[in-house]
Length: 369
Ligand code: PMV
Image 1 (cartoon, protein in one colour):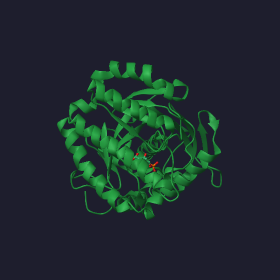
Image 2 (tube, rainbow, N blue to C red; image 1 turned 90 degrees about the horizontal axis):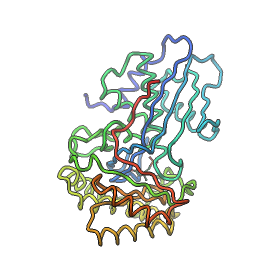
Image 3 (cartoon, helix red, strand yellow; image 1 turned 120 degrees about the vertical axis):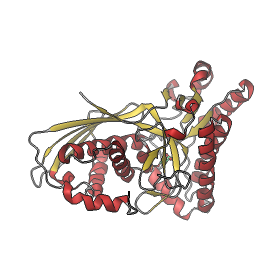
């Protein structure tokens, strides 16, 4: 690939993506999982570019399923209807319209199509379990499929997923990482040659098999809507007193994480994962104004987990996204012990005893009916 920014390349190629033949309506469906960040993305610049590289595992059961029905649009007609869990959802519809406006520079055919979009999640949305990641990823993969159908472009897998990641990023930064691969890196680092700030890349080849069968128990401490959006959090990083130190730390942690992933170093893995989660919330708490998302039960669960780990000498790690819910990342071989502990000791701290028994997966999939 040449050195030109991929956004510039996509803009130049967009001239060929305006005129097409299409009779009747067509349908396309994708399912995309949420991802859980091991190295957190918190702070951005320009058009959704990250201040530091981030790294995540794709989940399996926490996913968005999106079906898009599209046809040629009559000029001047309204062009997007968005249904979330079978109900027309006007706030989401507005967000999608703005998103389509924004990415039309790369996909001009969007302006000539009429869309009915049906989307559903297998987990609570807006509760900090990466629902914007899974939704924008499912949407971006669907749009790339539509491009491929209409123009016979994006023939190679790498090309297809690079563009899907690029487009997903413009909806929600973390969505760029919900692309095929178990472990995915977004953000330029000299440690991974093909890495980029504009899109994410899978790094499975650099991950020890032990981590590839890791599971993620997501304890739902509170499924209520977040009191502060992650966009606001990213914005507050612009004048944050600790911003510079954080971006430096993230790069150092990434280096250690890559080593842990490669060598199967579970202790180092847990140390970094947990430090990243605590740092994320410490940055939120020290923002001005402060963002306060953890709940008393979040801390109670963490205390319990630490005590259990000390007594049982087990390898597992806890982490938090931008919300109160606790993710426990653990190796497959201790599943029975962990499930037993969760069900007997941790469920009283969860909202209505709710938790998601999830695992690491290979990422999004097209659904063929
Ligand atoms: O993708 P956004 O803009 O919703 O940011 C989410 C950032 C975190 O989920 C808190 C961390 C991450 O890297 O996923």
